[in-house]
Image (cartoon, rainbow, N blue to C red; front, side, top):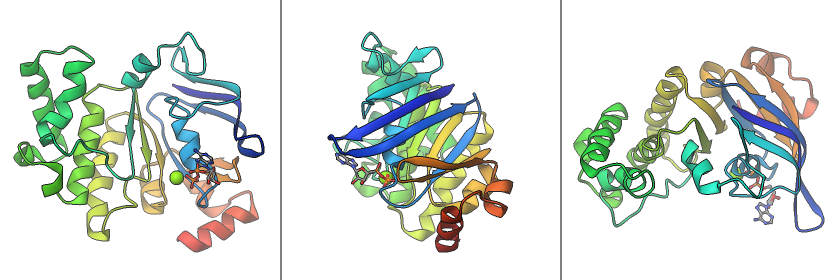
Length: 241
Ligand code: ADP
Ligand code: MG
């Protein structure tokens, strides 16, 4: 579903931010990406829907080559949902309108159907009762659950998450991880940048450890947490566990 073939990216001329990335993520796989601040985690997942271009290599989402000038990037982005650390909801739109906007405008779905689908998604994330609220009147955890519902409204093939719980108060982290776990169990292909090692242990099929733009580990959680291949991973785990 997602494939990186020897991907390299630089910021400017000197900052080699992604180094020889090779990855193969199957449909339905859940991959957690961790690593120190500045190691390139956000850059890595942002390349998948071309929020960041790459200089070398190939990235594929299903049959679509992302870094091909002939690829319709807007069409690609319909298939790749992205959830940001800071939710990024439209502040002037109600919860329901946040979710129906793209299906109506981009997918040209009728507004009654879009509304029905949005309500079903809100039900799924436990927020049907907030359909008419505005983002400013929701907690961080609720806003993030709406953001996930909004991503799902486009019926994506892949969902990407960039530190979805790191801007949340501790008591709200669980409700967002629960929604993500349900999504994982429904078979969604997911890449999740996160330092929630409990989530990685419980939900991930694979954990990647990124350091200075290199994938140092790519292992199932059982192996990642007990026998990491690199000393740098062990150091990192001592800090976050
Ligand atoms: P992480 O998400 O792991 O903290 P990032 O992917 O955000 O790391 O950033 C990796 C490195 O690239 C950092 O050194 C960061 O400062 C740098 N960087 C990120 N975005 C840009 C940009 N748009 N232009 C230049 N440098 C950037
Ligand atoms: Mg980041």
